[in-house]
Image (cartoon, rainbow, N blue to C red; front, side):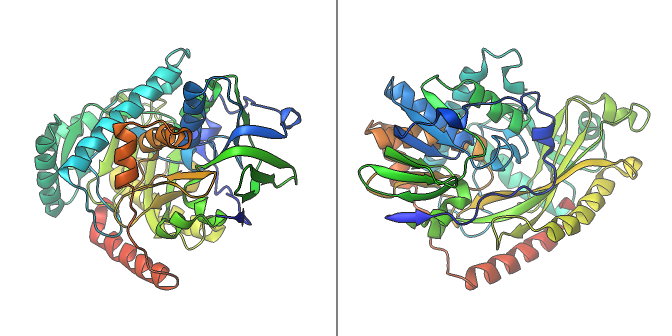
Length: 446
């Protein structure tokens, strides 16, 4: 990688409820006046991956000078636009392509996810609200009887992995969720839920003092070398001994080689106003819960602690990194229909927030994790599991940049081999057609 320029930066789509509802949204980090001319390490991207990397750099090298640049406010983009579910007992699948995960890969993923969860909990444990994490568990649920076969297979996979789950059906499930929409589910007790924008800003608030975090400071160009030169959109040029890219699907905007095997989808979501007790008593009295569909194009739904409903559905291929306004408008109609299917008694409830988000994927669910230049390193998560996977990838990317060996790092270097993706226009044509087919196949699960 020589000189690479990023002509496009993330743009906001709709109103992000997680950011707007975070008690930390008005906190500030380093002022641009404090920017130095040179740093030991520059991290580009202040999501969970970048913040974990920045923290690890100081853990490994106390006193190092670290700068983190984020194009928007922390938590406004992908790190704060996901469903806020942290399930360490994740069984990997692929949205597009074919998985080549082995049983050994699954064991590694469970171990690394556990490391990531404990890392996050350890970072925020000193905060009054502990980052807003709550161990609510996770329901993997189905509506249509034909999808119960997928649930049977999933239950067998959980058993093989030694993961304890509970099968719930009919009235027992309705009692837990406050809705009769879902017919069958597996309950995974060891899963946490949160406001993801609040959590990532909580992690940012706990950064070591040696780390300077600059929000709303896009990086325009990176010139690899010794030192690397990082050019900000303001025109300022920063020297860095090493640069760590943690910008998800925007990696390709910098021309980094592994990004050719990284692509993205857009997904769309809504968060309602808080429910009133008389509107849906059974739902209102339920404890907070999270549901993910077993079908990859199915909806994710949460009942939040403040009695709002969150629903994310509608998936399309991201021909452009940023969501176009007209696409968000069309998605809102499908989201309203999905809400009404699940909660017919709430047909007129207002959606207070509607937004679109970007989710990276690779064709085999393998992340990007590599040295990409003389002084440059990159990590990008995939398959929508960015909170935990990003946290462990960021930590070990720092280890890679600093030459700190371990079995975990050796495994990640060996296994992070994203599969080939065809060039445009074949990539867009094939992915869009496949996603349309999968969405139709999902039926009422979407």
